[in-house]
Image (cartoon, rainbow, N blue to C red):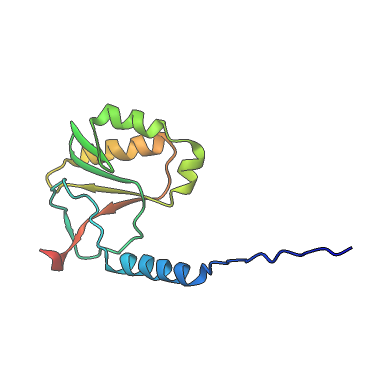
Amino acid sequence: MFFKRRLTTSVKADMVPMIDVVFQLVIFFMVSSTFIQTPGISIVLPESSTTESVTMTRMVITVVSEDELYLNKDVYNLSGIGTALAEFSDEEKQELSAVIIEGDQEVSYELLVKVLDLLRINRFKGVNLRMRTAEET
């Protein structure tokens, strides 16, 4: 018996050059992009000569007034932000290394203490106050 064998062509696409190009593009965009923390909220931070830089986190609370508090980009009043903080799970709270509070220099000390109390009640750890250095004026 004689069997005829068919030859099949095999075409392989090498993905390595495409992966290299995509990786280079990702690095380029990461290096060349700029990040604006809070683009629509204009506040004047209080000045301090002993400020230290902190690692940015994904939770920033901006205090403008008692009726205008921002949790990242979302606007709340004082009671509303307490409710929003209570909705975070314990796992999400553990993932946050720190919470950054930034307040206008005209905001009362009492309002900042109320925000700090809300964070403590909801068991957030590592709260940092953001301010500007004396050179930024």
